[in-house]
Image 1 (cartoon, rainbow over the protein chains, first blue to last red):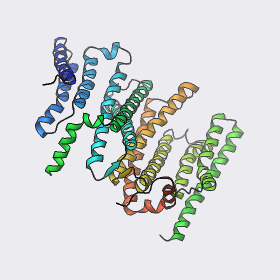
Image 2 (cartoon, one colour):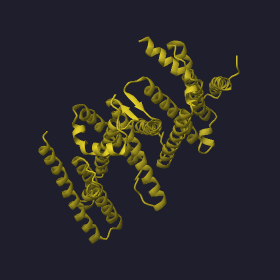
Image 3 (cartoon, rainbow over the protein chains, first blue to last red):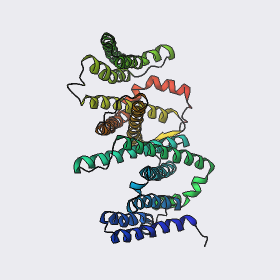
Image 4 (tube, rainbow over the protein chains, first blue to last red):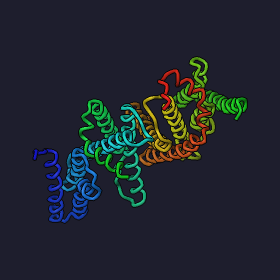
Length: 206
Length: 217
């Protein structure tokens, strides 16, 4: 079997999340202990989906999901959110990149298999960018709602919120444009080949 | 609807739009008499933008649906005319929620028309009604952010205070989202009942001359 570096990296990050969970128990940080373990379970979601529904998830997507959760958990447990400036912007960037990648894959698959949508690459890029921006807004509105209802301070100030949204937008643009180019060159299709085949099977089954 | 009725409907909306533009001109005069520079600039911008459909018709022979003329003028009038002429921002501080709602409905409507025309006439896009509604909501939310970015940058560079505070900005974004959703729901009905097709008849003919004909499948 070929050594797949992304696969190893993904499993290393998952193990690291468990280690961080145990470390949080040692320092009695119950909030981030909960975050680490639920992050671990969330990052196992692709594997669970693969087992349970017989849909294969592309390795790149698995890696991206794990990386986004790992950055968040690591930032919380090791207090990097508070010590490293702009750390939360990095987190926002990677999470939005992940969402943009999921959006692009979804649009690509819908374009291919659903009769209700046929679009060219420019349309896909556009939808990916604006979808990522809209998810950013939804996230911020969610934080705002939580702050209003529970009196917490998820959103620090206006500057913080605006830079979050800018990080989201930049991530969306980068992923959408590079994704568009890789669709053109055919590399994207190879990356998501496994889920493509799975969808094909699911549609064939019904 | 017969052709004459449609024409009548078209001119009625356009008349209403003209009345609102005159209101904005009055508000400009008041602004000049009060010597308020920011408000004068806002009035001029409002008048220029809301007369854009007239110039489009005159110089480029592009006729927008009358209701769009009206909505553009109405959104700007609410801000410039009501805000300036009647000073509603002071007794009703939440008035900008209304203006945001109206302008995001307008943006959503424009997005709907553009997507609809592309769907009908362009080879590169074929889209289901519900996917169209989804795209309309998402475009409206994204343009809400672009607007807030612009305000933010203006605040930083020019030292203005457009974005009052975090609460205000978040309410704006929330209202934009709601406006987009409302328009998308109305839009589904408009498309299904074929009313949008009637409204965009002229624009459709124009679009045909610019983009590829959709191949009959």
